[in-house]
Image (cartoon, rainbow over all chains, first blue to last red; front, top):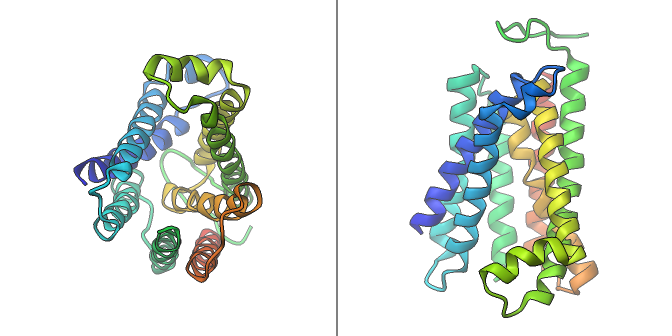
Length: 112
Length: 137
């Protein structure tokens, strides 16, 4: 459970670093190779998927607890978008993300 | 050009580029789904492998190798899209991968599609459509 929670939050940081790294990319190749933000973003993203697979495969894991944590990752990503990139959090975005989260819950219920 | 946004880092982000970023992420979700299916197929050859055998398998088993290569392409395209689009719109769209994987699982692994999954798929598609609308505004 803590693994999935950690995985979600780390994944949202991965997203934020990928975005900030992407903005720093220029025409020259060195802006990609020596881009520590991109590298950190990829590492965080990989780490979060490892946490996820480990957390979800735990037989004691309860889906009713796991999925709120997955949604926390999406909420965090919205939060970082607002904090670090000054993106507006509109009602449209919130309803889109809300629908996606409900959809994920339905698919996971259908899988079990 | 109906609307332009202003920010210190990107003086003019036009609507066309933002729309293209959304389409690239949708393409990414297809690539991500294909990668997951390939990796799932590839792991059949790894049933009781330990850590080292798994690590070697990623290179020597063609399906696994192809799957991870696709993930590499996924990441590169994602970075390209993030340059021009908003994180708060593009990141949630990745959830479309669930939709394609559910459909591919029925086609390739003959998993059954139950009402719950169909509703879930439909709701995710609706959510992504709403985000697409938010991208225009």
